[in-house]
Image (tube, rainbow, N blue to C red; front, top):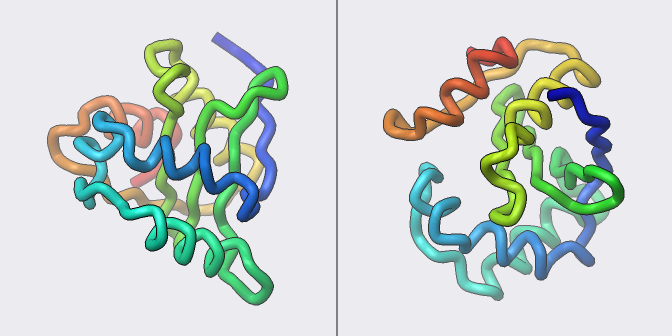
Length: 128
């Protein structure tokens, strides 16, 4: 499947969507940190991440103007989330491959040993 995924910088205005996706049950289960994130903690983190002088490195992936997931870069470590409504369509793999091809450089990923889908996505995108 080949689709045209676009990426834009996340902003503080994305707080509700990102909060919902981060606290999704399956997202938490597959994340290195599986605890539910309180709203105030989420808002503080997003404000630091997207605010002036913040590290940036947080993007919203869009397909046909609809947000489908996120990409986050910390140093060389890449992580991603596919929105719950978009799972099971192969978009995670396409999203990561597209991001890596648009931003070529070496990447790493820390993935839970039982998150087989993300491991497969990382390998297909050439991420160590």
